[in-house]
Amino acid sequence: MKDIINSLSRSQKKLLAITFDIVLSITATSFAIFIYFNMFTFFNLGVVGIYLFFIINFIISFSIFSLYKQVFRYFSFKNIINILYAFFIYLALNLIFLEIIEFKLLNMQIILFQSLSFFMMVIISRLAFISYISRKDSNHSTSSIVLYGVTENSVNLFNLLNNTKLNQVVFFIDDDSKYRKSSISTVPIKHTKDLDKLIKKYSPDEVIISDKYDLNAKRNIIKSLESYNLRIRLIPNLENITETYLRSSYSEPLSLEDLVDRKKMKSTDIKFIFKNKKILVTGAGGTIGSELVRQIYANDCKELIMLDNSEYNLYSINKEISNLNDKYNKNIITNSLLVNIKDKKKLERVFKIYKPDYVFHAAAYKHVSILEENVFEAVENNFYGTKNLVDIATKENIERFCFVSTDKAVNPKTIMGCSKRLAELYIQSVYQNLSKKKLTCPKFSIVRFGNVFNSSGSVVPLFNQQISTGGPVTVTSKEVERYFMSITEAVNLILQSTNLSSDCSIFVLDMGSPIKIIDLARRLIRLSGLSEKNNENPDGDIEIKITGISSYEKITEELSINKNLSYTEHESIFKDKLELIDKVDLDLLYQNLLKSMEIEDEVTIKKLLNNFN
Image (cartoon, rainbow, N blue to C red; front, side, top):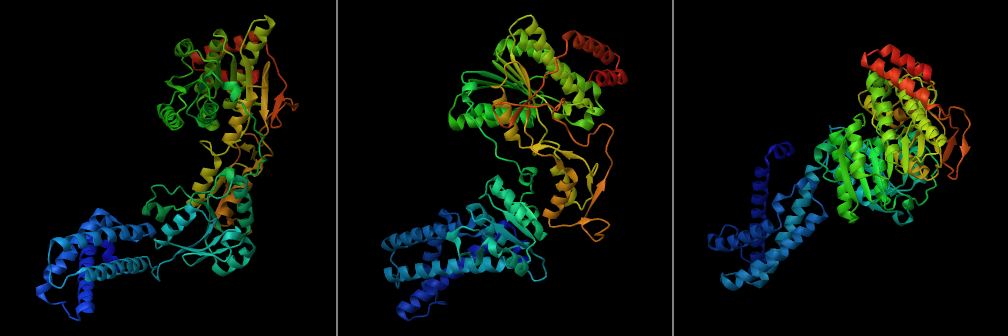
Protein backbone atom coordinates (compact mmCIF):
# COMPACT_ATOMS: atom_id res chain seq x y z
CA MET A 1 0.00 0.00 0.00
CA LYS A 2 2.79 2.44 0.94
CA ASP A 3 4.49 1.82 -2.40
CA ILE A 4 1.25 2.60 -4.25
CA ILE A 5 0.74 5.85 -2.30
CA ASN A 6 4.35 6.91 -2.83
CA SER A 7 4.06 6.22 -6.57
CA LEU A 8 1.14 8.68 -6.96
CA SER A 9 1.70 12.15 -8.39
CA ARG A 10 1.14 15.22 -6.23
CA SER A 11 -2.25 15.98 -7.85
CA GLN A 12 -3.35 12.33 -7.45
CA LYS A 13 -2.46 12.40 -3.75
CA LYS A 14 -4.41 15.66 -3.38
CA LEU A 15 -7.48 14.14 -5.08
CA LEU A 16 -7.22 11.05 -2.84
CA ALA A 17 -7.11 13.23 0.31
CA ILE A 18 -10.17 15.25 -0.81
CA THR A 19 -12.10 12.04 -1.62
CA PHE A 20 -11.23 10.59 1.77
CA ASP A 21 -12.36 13.78 3.56
CA ILE A 22 -15.65 13.73 1.61
CA VAL A 23 -16.26 10.20 2.94
CA LEU A 24 -15.46 11.45 6.47
CA SER A 25 -17.85 14.40 6.02
CA ILE A 26 -20.69 12.16 4.85
CA THR A 27 -20.03 9.78 7.77
CA ALA A 28 -20.01 12.66 10.29
CA THR A 29 -23.24 14.11 8.83
CA SER A 30 -25.03 10.74 8.92
CA PHE A 31 -23.81 10.15 12.45
CA ALA A 32 -25.02 13.61 13.62
CA ILE A 33 -28.50 13.10 12.13
CA PHE A 34 -28.71 9.57 13.57
CA ILE A 35 -27.76 10.74 17.08
CA TYR A 36 -30.14 13.70 17.01
CA PHE A 37 -33.17 12.18 15.20
CA ASN A 38 -32.45 8.45 15.62
CA MET A 39 -32.80 8.26 11.85
CA PHE A 40 -30.32 6.49 9.56
CA THR A 41 -29.74 8.63 6.41
CA PHE A 42 -26.61 7.16 4.79
CA PHE A 43 -28.47 5.98 1.64
CA ASN A 44 -31.29 8.49 1.81
CA LEU A 45 -31.27 10.54 -1.40
CA GLY A 46 -33.60 13.06 0.19
CA VAL A 47 -30.81 14.53 2.25
CA VAL A 48 -28.16 14.83 -0.53
CA GLY A 49 -28.43 18.63 -0.24
CA ILE A 50 -27.34 18.49 3.43
CA TYR A 51 -24.32 16.33 2.51
CA LEU A 52 -23.35 18.80 -0.24
CA PHE A 53 -23.86 21.70 2.17
CA PHE A 54 -21.20 20.35 4.56
CA ILE A 55 -18.85 19.14 1.77
CA ILE A 56 -18.78 22.51 -0.02
CA ASN A 57 -18.16 24.37 3.23
CA PHE A 58 -15.27 22.15 4.38
CA ILE A 59 -13.60 22.36 0.93
CA ILE A 60 -13.83 26.17 1.07
CA SER A 61 -12.40 26.37 4.61
CA PHE A 62 -9.63 23.81 3.87
CA SER A 63 -8.66 25.72 0.73
CA ILE A 64 -8.36 28.99 2.65
CA PHE A 65 -5.67 27.42 4.86
CA SER A 66 -4.06 25.39 2.01
CA LEU A 67 -4.55 22.12 3.88
CA TYR A 68 -4.31 20.09 0.68
CA LYS A 69 -0.94 21.59 -0.21
CA GLN A 70 0.52 20.06 2.96
CA VAL A 71 2.89 17.12 2.49
CA PHE A 72 1.35 14.64 4.94
CA ARG A 73 4.69 12.92 5.56
CA TYR A 74 5.81 16.08 7.41
CA PHE A 75 2.61 16.61 9.39
CA SER A 76 3.33 18.52 12.62
CA PHE A 77 1.72 20.47 15.46
CA LYS A 78 1.59 23.54 13.24
CA ASN A 79 -0.64 21.63 10.82
CA ILE A 80 -3.04 20.75 13.66
CA ILE A 81 -3.25 24.48 14.47
CA ASN A 82 -4.11 25.18 10.82
CA ILE A 83 -6.85 22.53 10.95
CA LEU A 84 -8.29 24.22 14.06
CA TYR A 85 -8.30 27.57 12.26
CA ALA A 86 -10.06 25.90 9.33
CA PHE A 87 -12.56 24.38 11.81
CA PHE A 88 -13.62 27.83 13.05
CA ILE A 89 -14.04 29.09 9.47
CA TYR A 90 -16.00 25.92 8.62
CA LEU A 91 -18.26 26.34 11.65
CA ALA A 92 -18.82 30.02 10.81
CA LEU A 93 -19.72 29.18 7.17
CA ASN A 94 -22.16 26.48 8.31
CA LEU A 95 -23.92 28.86 10.68
CA ILE A 96 -24.02 31.72 8.15
CA PHE A 97 -25.45 29.52 5.39
CA LEU A 98 -27.97 28.03 7.85
CA GLU A 99 -29.49 31.50 8.12
CA ILE A 100 -29.58 31.90 4.34
CA ILE A 101 -30.67 28.40 3.24
CA GLU A 102 -33.42 26.43 4.89
CA PHE A 103 -32.86 22.68 5.14
CA LYS A 104 -35.21 20.15 6.64
CA LEU A 105 -33.51 18.16 9.43
CA LEU A 106 -30.75 20.81 9.74
CA ASN A 107 -30.35 22.98 12.83
CA MET A 108 -27.61 24.53 14.98
CA GLN A 109 -27.22 21.44 17.23
CA ILE A 110 -26.61 19.15 14.25
CA ILE A 111 -24.14 21.65 12.73
CA LEU A 112 -22.16 21.81 15.98
CA PHE A 113 -22.14 18.02 16.41
CA GLN A 114 -21.26 17.37 12.73
CA SER A 115 -18.46 19.97 12.77
CA LEU A 116 -16.87 18.62 15.95
CA SER A 117 -17.09 14.97 14.90
CA PHE A 118 -15.85 15.72 11.37
CA PHE A 119 -12.77 17.59 12.57
CA MET A 120 -11.96 14.94 15.15
CA MET A 121 -12.11 12.38 12.33
CA VAL A 122 -9.83 14.54 10.13
CA ILE A 123 -7.16 14.96 12.81
CA ILE A 124 -7.26 11.26 13.87
CA SER A 125 -7.11 10.10 10.24
CA ARG A 126 -4.16 12.39 9.50
CA LEU A 127 -2.24 11.11 12.55
CA ALA A 128 -3.07 7.49 11.70
CA PHE A 129 -1.91 8.00 8.13
CA ILE A 130 1.39 9.59 9.27
CA SER A 131 1.95 6.73 11.70
CA TYR A 132 1.39 4.22 8.91
CA ILE A 133 3.38 5.91 6.16
CA SER A 134 6.33 6.65 8.49
CA ARG A 135 6.54 3.13 9.91
CA LYS A 136 9.88 1.51 9.15
CA ASP A 137 9.88 -1.61 7.00
CA SER A 138 11.13 -4.64 8.88
CA ASN A 139 13.44 -5.57 6.00
CA HIS A 140 14.96 -2.09 5.78
CA SER A 141 18.08 -1.28 7.81
CA THR A 142 17.86 1.87 9.89
CA SER A 143 20.54 4.04 11.39
CA SER A 144 20.26 4.50 15.16
CA ILE A 145 21.02 8.08 16.15
CA VAL A 146 21.65 9.93 19.41
CA LEU A 147 20.95 13.67 19.50
CA TYR A 148 23.31 15.40 21.94
CA GLY A 149 21.73 18.57 23.36
CA VAL A 150 18.06 19.58 23.35
CA THR A 151 17.43 22.70 21.28
CA GLU A 152 14.73 23.81 18.86
CA ASN A 153 16.98 22.73 15.98
CA SER A 154 17.69 19.28 17.43
CA VAL A 155 13.96 18.67 18.05
CA ASN A 156 13.21 19.78 14.47
CA LEU A 157 15.91 17.43 13.19
CA PHE A 158 14.38 14.65 15.32
CA ASN A 159 10.99 15.21 13.67
CA LEU A 160 12.55 15.22 10.21
CA LEU A 161 14.63 12.10 10.82
CA ASN A 162 11.61 10.22 12.11
CA ASN A 163 9.85 10.88 8.82
CA THR A 164 12.45 8.91 6.86
CA LYS A 165 12.83 5.15 6.68
CA LEU A 166 16.59 5.33 7.16
CA ASN A 167 16.92 6.84 10.63
CA GLN A 168 15.71 6.32 14.17
CA VAL A 169 16.56 8.62 17.07
CA VAL A 170 16.94 6.32 20.09
CA PHE A 171 17.58 8.94 22.80
CA PHE A 172 18.59 12.52 23.53
CA ILE A 173 21.50 13.45 25.83
CA ASP A 174 21.28 16.61 27.93
CA ASP A 175 22.53 17.34 31.45
CA ASP A 176 20.17 20.26 32.02
CA SER A 177 18.18 19.54 35.21
CA LYS A 178 14.93 20.77 33.65
CA TYR A 179 14.99 17.74 31.31
CA ARG A 180 15.39 15.19 34.10
CA LYS A 181 13.15 12.16 33.53
CA SER A 182 11.65 13.84 30.45
CA SER A 183 11.08 12.66 26.92
CA ILE A 184 10.30 14.04 23.48
CA SER A 185 7.60 12.05 21.66
CA THR A 186 8.36 8.96 23.77
CA VAL A 187 12.12 9.28 23.08
CA PRO A 188 13.88 9.67 26.46
CA ILE A 189 16.25 12.50 27.43
CA LYS A 190 19.19 10.98 29.30
CA HIS A 191 22.09 12.26 31.42
CA THR A 192 25.74 11.80 30.44
CA LYS A 193 26.39 9.78 33.63
CA ASP A 194 24.35 6.98 32.05
CA LEU A 195 26.18 7.13 28.72
CA ASP A 196 28.05 3.81 29.07
CA LYS A 197 24.84 1.89 29.83
CA LEU A 198 22.93 3.67 27.06
CA ILE A 199 25.55 2.92 24.41
CA LYS A 200 25.51 -0.77 25.37
CA LYS A 201 21.70 -0.90 25.44
CA TYR A 202 20.90 0.95 22.19
CA SER A 203 24.13 0.38 20.16
CA PRO A 204 23.70 3.64 18.23
CA ASP A 205 25.52 4.22 14.93
CA GLU A 206 25.87 7.98 15.19
CA VAL A 207 25.84 10.92 17.58
CA ILE A 208 24.78 14.34 16.27
CA ILE A 209 25.88 17.26 18.44
CA SER A 210 23.40 20.14 18.52
CA ASP A 211 24.04 23.86 18.22
CA LYS A 212 23.58 24.29 21.98
CA TYR A 213 27.30 24.20 22.78
CA ASP A 214 30.15 26.64 22.21
CA LEU A 215 33.37 25.51 20.55
CA ASN A 216 35.20 24.46 23.75
CA ALA A 217 32.18 22.51 25.06
CA LYS A 218 31.83 20.84 21.66
CA ARG A 219 35.48 19.76 21.72
CA ASN A 220 35.04 18.26 25.21
CA ILE A 221 31.92 16.35 24.07
CA ILE A 222 33.81 14.95 21.07
CA LYS A 223 36.62 13.80 23.40
CA SER A 224 34.14 12.10 25.76
CA LEU A 225 32.57 10.19 22.84
CA GLU A 226 35.78 9.25 21.08
CA SER A 227 36.21 5.87 22.78
CA TYR A 228 32.79 4.51 21.73
CA ASN A 229 33.56 3.88 18.04
CA LEU A 230 30.61 5.99 16.89
CA ARG A 231 30.28 8.37 14.01
CA ILE A 232 30.33 11.89 15.48
CA ARG A 233 28.68 14.62 13.43
CA LEU A 234 27.33 18.14 13.86
CA ILE A 235 23.75 19.32 13.41
CA PRO A 236 23.18 20.80 9.92
CA ASN A 237 21.57 24.10 8.99
CA LEU A 238 17.88 23.14 8.84
CA GLU A 239 16.76 26.05 6.65
CA ASN A 240 15.21 24.86 3.39
CA ILE A 241 16.16 21.27 4.19
CA THR A 242 14.78 18.67 1.80
CA GLU A 243 13.98 14.99 2.10
CA THR A 244 16.69 14.24 -0.49
CA TYR A 245 19.21 15.98 1.75
CA LEU A 246 17.99 14.04 4.78
CA ARG A 247 18.39 10.74 2.99
CA SER A 248 21.92 11.50 1.82
CA SER A 249 23.55 13.75 4.40
CA TYR A 250 21.47 14.75 7.40
CA SER A 251 24.44 15.95 9.44
CA GLU A 252 27.63 17.94 9.05
CA PRO A 253 31.13 16.38 9.25
CA LEU A 254 33.50 17.53 11.97
CA SER A 255 35.91 20.30 11.08
CA LEU A 256 39.48 20.80 12.25
CA GLU A 257 38.28 23.56 14.56
CA ASP A 258 36.11 21.02 16.41
CA LEU A 259 39.07 18.73 17.01
CA VAL A 260 41.98 20.98 17.98
CA ASP A 261 42.20 22.42 21.47
CA ARG A 262 43.30 26.03 21.70
CA LYS A 263 43.28 28.36 24.65
CA LYS A 264 40.82 31.23 24.46
CA MET A 265 42.41 34.36 23.04
CA LYS A 266 42.34 37.66 24.88
CA SER A 267 40.48 40.24 22.83
CA THR A 268 40.76 44.00 23.13
CA ASP A 269 38.70 46.83 21.69
CA ILE A 270 40.35 48.04 18.48
CA LYS A 271 37.56 50.18 17.04
CA PHE A 272 39.60 53.34 17.71
CA ILE A 273 42.20 52.12 15.17
CA PHE A 274 39.71 52.12 12.29
CA LYS A 275 37.40 55.00 13.18
CA ASN A 276 37.03 57.41 10.24
CA LYS A 277 39.60 55.45 8.21
CA LYS A 278 39.52 54.23 4.63
CA ILE A 279 40.75 50.63 4.54
CA LEU A 280 42.00 48.77 1.46
CA VAL A 281 42.03 44.96 1.66
CA THR A 282 43.73 43.01 -1.14
CA GLY A 283 42.62 39.44 -1.75
CA ALA A 284 39.34 40.55 -0.16
CA GLY A 285 37.43 37.48 -1.37
CA GLY A 286 39.93 34.89 -0.10
CA THR A 287 39.93 32.94 3.16
CA ILE A 288 41.91 35.52 5.17
CA GLY A 289 40.92 38.56 3.11
CA SER A 290 37.17 38.00 3.49
CA GLU A 291 37.51 37.60 7.27
CA LEU A 292 39.61 40.80 7.37
CA VAL A 293 36.76 42.55 5.56
CA ARG A 294 34.16 41.21 8.03
CA GLN A 295 36.09 42.22 11.13
CA ILE A 296 37.15 45.62 9.79
CA TYR A 297 33.51 46.26 8.88
CA ALA A 298 32.48 45.23 12.41
CA ASN A 299 34.98 47.75 13.81
CA ASP A 300 33.19 50.65 12.08
CA CYS A 301 35.65 51.98 9.53
CA LYS A 302 34.61 54.87 7.30
CA GLU A 303 35.13 53.14 3.95
CA LEU A 304 36.01 49.61 2.80
CA ILE A 305 37.88 49.13 -0.47
CA MET A 306 37.72 45.44 -1.38
CA LEU A 307 40.17 44.41 -4.09
CA ASP A 308 40.45 40.95 -5.68
CA ASN A 309 41.22 39.39 -9.07
CA SER A 310 38.46 36.75 -8.68
CA GLU A 311 35.07 38.03 -9.82
CA TYR A 312 33.10 35.36 -7.95
CA ASN A 313 35.00 35.81 -4.66
CA LEU A 314 34.61 39.58 -4.90
CA TYR A 315 30.89 39.23 -5.66
CA SER A 316 30.41 36.92 -2.65
CA ILE A 317 32.06 39.17 -0.07
CA ASN A 318 30.47 42.30 -1.55
CA LYS A 319 27.00 40.74 -1.29
CA GLU A 320 27.65 39.67 2.30
CA ILE A 321 28.82 43.15 3.38
CA SER A 322 25.98 44.86 1.47
CA ASN A 323 23.47 42.70 3.33
CA LEU A 324 25.12 43.62 6.65
CA ASN A 325 24.97 47.30 5.71
CA ASP A 326 21.23 47.01 5.05
CA LYS A 327 20.62 44.95 8.19
CA TYR A 328 22.51 47.20 10.63
CA ASN A 329 22.09 50.46 8.73
CA LYS A 330 25.76 51.36 9.26
CA ASN A 331 26.17 53.19 5.94
CA ILE A 332 29.83 52.21 5.64
CA ILE A 333 30.95 53.02 2.09
CA THR A 334 31.99 49.85 0.23
CA ASN A 335 33.84 49.53 -3.07
CA SER A 336 34.47 46.26 -4.96
CA LEU A 337 37.43 46.50 -7.31
CA LEU A 338 38.26 43.74 -9.77
CA VAL A 339 42.00 44.41 -9.99
CA ASN A 340 45.10 42.22 -10.16
CA ILE A 341 47.95 43.38 -7.89
CA LYS A 342 50.40 42.61 -10.74
CA ASP A 343 48.90 45.55 -12.67
CA LYS A 344 50.79 48.54 -11.26
CA LYS A 345 49.00 51.18 -13.36
CA LYS A 346 45.57 50.09 -12.16
CA LEU A 347 46.82 49.97 -8.56
CA GLU A 348 48.13 53.53 -8.88
CA ARG A 349 44.70 54.63 -10.12
CA VAL A 350 43.03 52.86 -7.16
CA PHE A 351 45.23 54.75 -4.67
CA LYS A 352 44.67 58.08 -6.46
CA ILE A 353 40.88 57.72 -6.55
CA TYR A 354 40.15 56.07 -3.18
CA LYS A 355 43.07 57.41 -1.07
CA PRO A 356 43.18 54.58 1.52
CA ASP A 357 44.59 55.25 4.98
CA TYR A 358 45.48 51.62 5.73
CA VAL A 359 46.33 48.67 3.50
CA PHE A 360 45.90 45.02 4.56
CA HIS A 361 47.67 42.96 1.92
CA ALA A 362 46.30 39.41 1.94
CA ALA A 363 46.34 38.70 -1.81
CA ALA A 364 48.66 35.78 -2.61
CA TYR A 365 49.01 32.50 -4.42
CA LYS A 366 49.44 30.00 -1.59
CA HIS A 367 48.99 26.37 -2.71
CA VAL A 368 52.50 24.94 -2.39
CA SER A 369 52.34 22.08 -4.90
CA ILE A 370 50.66 24.22 -7.57
CA LEU A 371 53.25 26.99 -7.25
CA GLU A 372 56.11 24.49 -7.61
CA GLU A 373 54.84 23.98 -11.17
CA ASN A 374 54.07 27.68 -11.77
CA VAL A 375 57.22 29.50 -10.69
CA PHE A 376 56.74 32.64 -12.83
CA GLU A 377 53.22 33.24 -11.55
CA ALA A 378 54.30 32.71 -7.92
CA VAL A 379 57.13 35.26 -8.15
CA GLU A 380 55.08 37.68 -10.24
CA ASN A 381 52.08 37.67 -7.91
CA ASN A 382 53.59 37.19 -4.46
CA PHE A 383 56.73 39.28 -4.89
CA TYR A 384 56.12 41.74 -7.74
CA GLY A 385 52.53 42.30 -6.65
CA THR A 386 53.65 43.09 -3.09
CA LYS A 387 56.42 45.35 -4.43
CA ASN A 388 53.84 47.27 -6.49
CA LEU A 389 51.65 47.84 -3.44
CA VAL A 390 54.55 48.84 -1.16
CA ASP A 391 55.99 51.28 -3.71
CA ILE A 392 52.61 52.95 -4.33
CA ALA A 393 51.68 53.02 -0.62
CA THR A 394 55.05 54.65 0.19
CA LYS A 395 54.65 57.18 -2.62
CA GLU A 396 51.11 58.05 -1.49
CA ASN A 397 52.32 58.23 2.15
CA ILE A 398 49.56 56.07 3.64
CA GLU A 399 49.45 55.60 7.42
CA ARG A 400 49.74 51.81 7.86
CA PHE A 401 50.63 48.84 5.71
CA CYS A 402 50.11 45.29 7.03
CA PHE A 403 51.48 42.35 5.07
CA VAL A 404 49.89 38.94 5.74
CA SER A 405 52.77 36.45 5.51
CA THR A 406 53.15 32.75 6.36
CA ASP A 407 55.26 30.36 8.42
CA LYS A 408 56.46 28.96 5.08
CA ALA A 409 58.52 32.14 4.62
CA VAL A 410 60.83 31.01 7.45
CA ASN A 411 63.90 29.20 6.01
CA PRO A 412 61.80 28.52 2.91
CA LYS A 413 62.10 25.33 0.88
CA THR A 414 59.23 26.03 -1.53
CA ILE A 415 58.60 28.56 -4.28
CA MET A 416 55.61 29.78 -2.30
CA GLY A 417 57.73 30.29 0.84
CA CYS A 418 60.58 31.93 -1.11
CA SER A 419 58.24 34.38 -2.84
CA LYS A 420 56.64 35.38 0.48
CA ARG A 421 60.03 35.69 2.21
CA LEU A 422 61.23 37.88 -0.63
CA ALA A 423 58.18 40.11 -0.12
CA GLU A 424 58.98 40.34 3.62
CA LEU A 425 62.58 41.36 2.87
CA TYR A 426 61.46 43.97 0.36
CA ILE A 427 59.13 45.63 2.86
CA GLN A 428 61.94 45.70 5.45
CA SER A 429 64.43 47.11 2.94
CA VAL A 430 62.04 49.94 1.97
CA TYR A 431 61.57 50.76 5.65
CA GLN A 432 65.34 50.74 6.28
CA ASN A 433 66.05 52.92 3.24
CA LEU A 434 63.45 55.55 4.19
CA SER A 435 64.51 55.51 7.85
CA LYS A 436 68.16 56.13 6.93
CA LYS A 437 67.09 59.14 4.86
CA LYS A 438 64.79 60.21 7.71
CA LEU A 439 61.83 60.28 5.35
CA THR A 440 58.26 59.55 6.43
CA CYS A 441 56.93 56.12 5.58
CA PRO A 442 53.92 53.98 6.46
CA LYS A 443 53.93 52.03 9.72
CA PHE A 444 54.76 48.66 8.22
CA SER A 445 53.93 45.39 9.93
CA ILE A 446 54.40 41.80 8.81
CA VAL A 447 52.31 39.02 10.39
CA ARG A 448 53.31 35.35 10.22
CA PHE A 449 51.14 32.39 11.16
CA GLY A 450 50.56 28.78 10.12
CA ASN A 451 47.55 26.94 8.75
CA VAL A 452 44.05 28.10 9.54
CA PHE A 453 41.05 25.86 10.15
CA ASN A 454 38.77 25.19 7.18
CA SER A 455 40.69 27.26 4.66
CA SER A 456 40.53 26.35 0.98
CA GLY A 457 42.76 23.32 0.48
CA SER A 458 42.54 22.33 4.17
CA VAL A 459 43.50 18.73 4.95
CA VAL A 460 40.35 17.84 6.95
CA PRO A 461 37.79 18.13 4.09
CA LEU A 462 40.16 15.97 2.01
CA PHE A 463 40.34 13.34 4.78
CA ASN A 464 36.53 13.39 5.22
CA GLN A 465 36.08 12.87 1.48
CA GLN A 466 38.58 10.00 1.44
CA ILE A 467 36.89 8.35 4.45
CA SER A 468 33.42 8.68 2.86
CA THR A 469 34.65 6.84 -0.27
CA GLY A 470 36.23 4.02 1.74
CA GLY A 471 39.81 5.28 1.75
CA PRO A 472 42.68 5.14 1.70
CA VAL A 473 43.48 8.31 3.63
CA THR A 474 46.73 9.73 2.26
CA VAL A 475 49.42 11.22 4.50
CA THR A 476 52.87 12.22 3.23
CA SER A 477 54.82 11.09 6.30
CA LYS A 478 54.20 9.72 9.79
CA GLU A 479 56.30 12.55 11.21
CA VAL A 480 54.76 15.55 9.41
CA GLU A 481 53.18 18.04 11.81
CA ARG A 482 51.62 21.45 11.37
CA TYR A 483 50.41 24.43 13.40
CA PHE A 484 46.72 25.36 13.20
CA MET A 485 44.50 28.20 14.39
CA SER A 486 41.04 29.50 13.55
CA ILE A 487 40.54 32.05 10.77
CA THR A 488 38.63 34.35 13.13
CA GLU A 489 41.40 34.27 15.74
CA ALA A 490 44.19 34.78 13.19
CA VAL A 491 42.49 37.82 11.64
CA ASN A 492 41.66 39.35 15.03
CA LEU A 493 45.33 39.10 15.99
CA ILE A 494 46.40 40.59 12.63
CA LEU A 495 44.20 43.61 13.31
CA GLN A 496 45.46 43.96 16.88
CA SER A 497 49.09 43.72 15.77
CA THR A 498 48.76 46.81 13.56
CA ASN A 499 48.53 48.92 16.70
CA LEU A 500 51.71 47.37 18.12
CA SER A 501 54.05 48.27 15.26
CA SER A 502 56.22 51.38 15.49
CA ASP A 503 58.95 50.36 13.02
CA CYS A 504 58.62 47.46 10.59
CA SER A 505 57.83 44.70 13.04
CA ILE A 506 57.51 41.04 12.13
CA PHE A 507 54.77 39.64 14.34
CA VAL A 508 54.39 35.93 14.97
CA LEU A 509 51.04 34.65 16.24
CA ASP A 510 50.83 32.08 19.02
CA MET A 511 49.96 28.92 17.12
CA GLY A 512 49.98 26.61 20.14
CA SER A 513 51.56 23.16 19.73
CA PRO A 514 52.02 21.48 16.33
CA ILE A 515 49.73 18.57 15.47
CA LYS A 516 50.83 15.38 13.73
CA ILE A 517 48.81 14.97 10.53
CA ILE A 518 48.67 11.17 10.86
CA ASP A 519 47.16 11.53 14.37
CA LEU A 520 44.54 13.83 12.88
CA ALA A 521 43.73 11.25 10.18
CA ARG A 522 43.42 8.46 12.77
CA ARG A 523 41.14 10.55 14.94
CA LEU A 524 38.83 11.41 12.04
CA ILE A 525 38.58 7.72 11.11
CA ARG A 526 37.71 6.85 14.71
CA LEU A 527 35.15 9.67 14.97
CA SER A 528 33.52 8.39 11.79
CA GLY A 529 32.67 5.20 13.70
CA LEU A 530 35.28 3.27 11.70
CA SER A 531 38.61 1.61 12.46
CA GLU A 532 42.03 1.91 10.87
CA LYS A 533 43.05 -0.97 8.61
CA ASN A 534 46.65 -1.95 9.35
CA ASN A 535 48.87 -4.95 10.14
CA GLU A 536 47.47 -5.19 13.67
CA ASN A 537 43.89 -4.82 12.40
CA PRO A 538 43.68 -6.34 8.89
CA ASP A 539 39.87 -6.35 9.01
CA GLY A 540 39.70 -2.61 9.69
CA ASP A 541 37.69 -0.17 7.55
CA ILE A 542 40.03 2.58 6.35
CA GLU A 543 43.72 2.29 5.46
CA ILE A 544 46.17 5.17 5.96
CA LYS A 545 48.57 5.28 3.03
CA ILE A 546 51.96 6.99 3.43
CA THR A 547 52.69 8.63 0.06
CA GLY A 548 56.17 9.97 0.84
CA ILE A 549 57.27 13.49 1.61
CA SER A 550 58.32 15.74 -1.28
CA SER A 551 61.76 17.33 -1.48
CA TYR A 552 60.32 20.78 -0.79
CA GLU A 553 58.06 19.86 2.14
CA LYS A 554 59.16 20.32 5.76
CA ILE A 555 58.48 17.89 8.55
CA THR A 556 57.66 20.78 10.91
CA GLU A 557 57.00 24.38 9.94
CA GLU A 558 58.92 27.13 11.70
CA LEU A 559 57.62 30.50 12.86
CA SER A 560 60.90 32.34 13.55
CA ILE A 561 64.14 32.53 11.60
CA ASN A 562 66.31 33.24 14.65
CA LYS A 563 64.26 31.29 17.19
CA ASN A 564 64.44 34.53 19.15
CA LEU A 565 60.90 35.75 19.68
CA SER A 566 60.20 38.56 22.12
CA TYR A 567 56.98 39.37 23.97
CA THR A 568 54.61 42.19 23.09
CA GLU A 569 51.75 43.81 25.00
CA HIS A 570 49.47 41.04 23.71
CA GLU A 571 50.03 37.56 25.13
CA SER A 572 49.23 35.84 21.81
CA ILE A 573 51.42 38.06 19.62
CA PHE A 574 55.22 37.80 19.57
CA LYS A 575 57.83 39.83 17.72
CA ASP A 576 60.62 38.35 15.61
CA LYS A 577 64.01 39.96 15.20
CA LEU A 578 64.33 42.18 12.10
CA GLU A 579 66.82 41.09 9.46
CA LEU A 580 67.25 44.25 7.46
CA ILE A 581 68.75 43.90 3.98
CA ASP A 582 70.11 46.70 1.87
CA LYS A 583 67.65 47.81 -0.78
CA VAL A 584 70.45 47.87 -3.36
CA ASP A 585 70.86 44.09 -3.04
CA LEU A 586 67.15 43.53 -3.42
CA ASP A 587 66.93 45.84 -6.44
CA LEU A 588 69.73 43.85 -8.06
CA LEU A 589 67.88 40.60 -7.38
CA TYR A 590 64.72 42.17 -8.78
CA GLN A 591 66.50 43.07 -12.03
CA ASN A 592 68.04 39.59 -12.35
CA LEU A 593 64.67 37.95 -11.73
CA LEU A 594 63.11 40.23 -14.33
CA LYS A 595 65.65 39.19 -16.96
CA SER A 596 65.11 35.51 -16.17
CA MET A 597 61.33 35.96 -16.30
CA GLU A 598 61.58 37.57 -19.76
CA ILE A 599 63.43 34.57 -21.19
CA GLU A 600 61.40 32.09 -19.09
CA ASP A 601 64.51 30.70 -17.42
CA GLU A 602 62.88 28.76 -14.56
CA VAL A 603 66.14 27.12 -13.44
CA THR A 604 67.87 30.48 -12.90
CA ILE A 605 64.83 31.90 -11.09
CA LYS A 606 64.84 28.99 -8.62
CA LYS A 607 68.61 29.35 -8.16
CA LEU A 608 68.34 33.11 -7.51
CA LEU A 609 65.56 32.58 -4.97
CA ASN A 610 67.33 29.77 -3.13
CA ASN A 611 70.66 31.62 -2.97
CA PHE A 612 69.05 34.83 -1.74
CA ASN A 613 66.92 33.17 0.89
